Image (cartoon, rainbow, N blue to C red):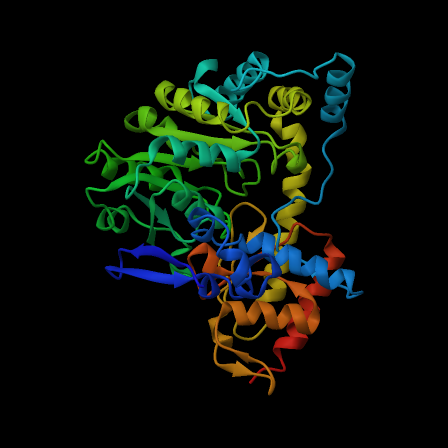
Length: 435
């Protein structure tokens, strides 16, 4: 029983159906999703694909458990520890007995700290009742989609996009609409390309900048041009995912919500996971028009209520700190690694890279290797490419299909320098065996 997934590609003016095997081939072989179990679970679950990043992480763990030396470059997690002053705030919260339920959108002092952060770092004006904190930015995105989308509503997704966007949209009974880009355009889409994808059913535009997986950063001029186009479509709202804001190698980060015409139409999503190395603390948040914030509060109140009170107090301390004191060294390390890994990849025949301006990923085009073989394994697509490297030299990437760009793979460089260099050496040697 293979479930079909509907994607609209406006550039090619077609609706495509993809099975779970096509989107992520190991899905059908996973013990968790065999045919018998799929007949028992809900249709809602069967409509969702397994997260490609988490699936690759699971396969990496399984190989490690068998004794293989796997270098996992598949997950988006900083390899830094949470700063000590934030951990101290959590310890104090425990001592101060922050062990009870908090208001659903978060402690008032945390929401006020987020208001301060938005004004200080982004020039965004919010009040505390426009802030909703959640169990990670992923829940924030789900809250927005569940609050705004009706069945059949379309959401524009500039490609590449983070893997969970499309699945969250489908969970909310919306329709993901891919707006393609390529490495030649630095993985950016133009206002004209977005406008060509708009229909009477379009409800949202959802994007990240800096982008996961490409590292692309939209400039102030580029976002203003998109906003100018959207002035013609007042019923389209924007979800701006800024979770990688502080890992930005350009002169500065620009927020869509600061554009006057977009102020009441933009939901800004952020959190503490990436810039503050707090992935496991699970605190994300939105700043939104009041009516959207109230809607997200209502949704969250029936699903999880508030996130952990102790994590909230830690996040409050993070929000009030000078971000440069927290993120400067980490950003410098990531920039050094970016340059190192680009240098290695550019010395491998057939690998084509852009220069990411943020986040901690490279998203190379590997289509040169499609159709090649080592005599045993045939490489027909990016999924085959990733599985070949995982099984032959124990390096884990994520195929670009899940991000909307099937000719690419995502490589995280949130790993120690020696691990990255070892991984690049393995890859170069293994790819040399293909012809």
